[in-house]
Length: 553
Image (cartoon, rainbow, N blue to C red; front, side, top):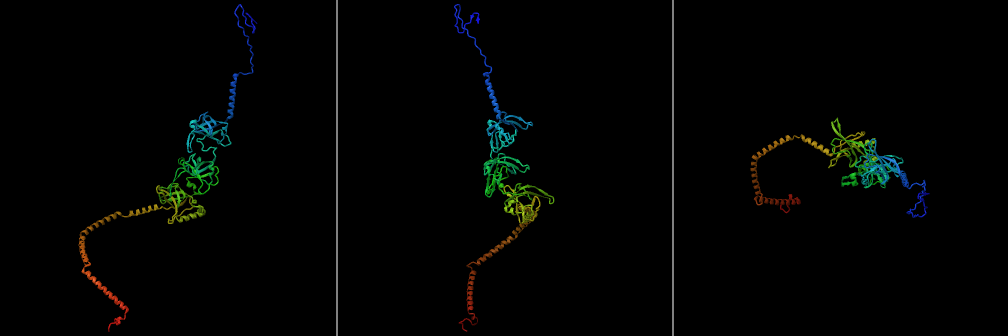
């Protein structure tokens, strides 16, 4: 290949230097271009490809670790945030909140939760969920860690085999979770008292459990409580255990003085329950789960022997019932046989008077083991006959004062041999027993009777007569002072002179005194002579005929 200047030198030729002109630089050879293979990718696409593969792996891993989606309904979504609030079990995250929506009727909120693969075990029917917030309850303060971390949803795994995807959240945390060991029991009582969920349970003053729930009976006459005793303390709950309210302060006054009894300071504030077997008795076999017990009002009521079937009795009193209240004891010589259940008032149109009926429940079994064994059953013919005999011998009801400070009354049953005769209708329901006034009422009746008699006395007329008598006496004294006193003064003067003369006559050195003394001496000698003559005649009675021996004829 040639150019206008001449042939192109070879690549290896040295540059020429013509004398006719300057030297020219050597020319480079043309590059040889080889085409790249079409099957090798560019390095620029490697990095996005690797990133895509990593993303796909993460998605696959996320899908594999993702559990089911469940919906939990709460009253309020306070403290919950989608994408932020977690679901935890023992502080381990088992899910997270995806969305929060309102229900169609706007009464609650629906929280959609994405559970993890491990959290899929919570998608069963008896699982429970609640919002953990700072709370102050009967069992103490909980949820303080959420002050910094925020609220979260707590979970309690269920044990059911049936799956579920909709749950109703709890408004308060459950007192007992499914992983706690122990046993649950049911208590029936007359009143809830100061008990609340979380209230403690004591055994010999040691806290061994808590109250987990309560409800009102369908009949409305009592309450039912669910209690949980933690292991290993549940072994002390036997079939013979007695349960009672340990709330508040028990202050008693008896012959030993004041007695203050309470379980702990916590029971004074939030209440509590206690259980124990009766003194001198064993607790019996261990009570099974969900066994039912009677809940007594206090320890004394719990430790009392079983009462048996109560006997409904009514007593009609003709006096004021001020100081008598429902629940007052029915006493028989110091033994509480029952309590008052109702106090009323009744009008009798025949006598046009009011009576005060008092209804009570009496437990005859409290009269002792021997009475239970020998006494006939109530309602039978033998039992009616026995009751008639007791009334015939003086069985009566009486109101008595139980406390002089508070003037509280109670009903006393006793035998009054001198009580007026009375009859009893043994077929009535409730059974009506006769009554008798107490000593104070009898005294009041006697005082009222005396007052009536005193009211009949004519005190005004007696006062007028007494006033007239006093006036007459005053006139009499005035007359005596004028007429009798001067004469009495002269008489006293004459008597004084007579006494002076008699004193002068009876003086020791007076002549009369000397003559009397001599006469007494002569009389003494004469008596001595007569005494000697009497002795001689007694020895010589013949001297009365012959004369004294030695005398001449």
